[in-house]
Length: 215
Image (cartoon, rainbow, N blue to C red):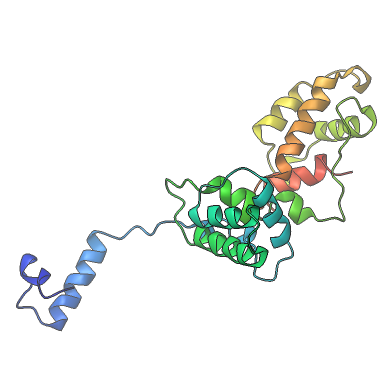
């Protein structure tokens, strides 16, 4: 607290003990609300310094939509204008770190974080697991998953999200009568899940994607 601010608060004559007491009282009556950062909220999705995902995220940055974060914009400009790739990669990492340290509240950087700075479900599943890529007309793979969905164990594998729960209600009769629209619904959910931010292996979306989207 500056010397100028003390008289304004009526504390000019207080000693160190008095100021300490005031600080405690102020903290008790008006607790500072610490803003939640990306790094805290999505700690399991952060790309560590040695992560091998940096290169793939950098390629997405070069080829994807224009980011909102200024440092990521600079990285993209340098990478796409024939500049030094190494410098662009350093700017990419710097921009992501700045997002990690920034507040989530009223942010305009969520899409940047999700696309260029974070592990998604597909990243975490890794190459050892193959996502079903066949179209909705493939009855073999998708119908098998739809039948599994009918017997979903919520106690073990979390409550179904609203999309899967709604789909489950439509699964009536023999699976041979199920139209492409049911398989399409599951495929679209799986395709979207691949890009969702990874929030832990016990997270419901991760668990259910593993059950209903992986061969």
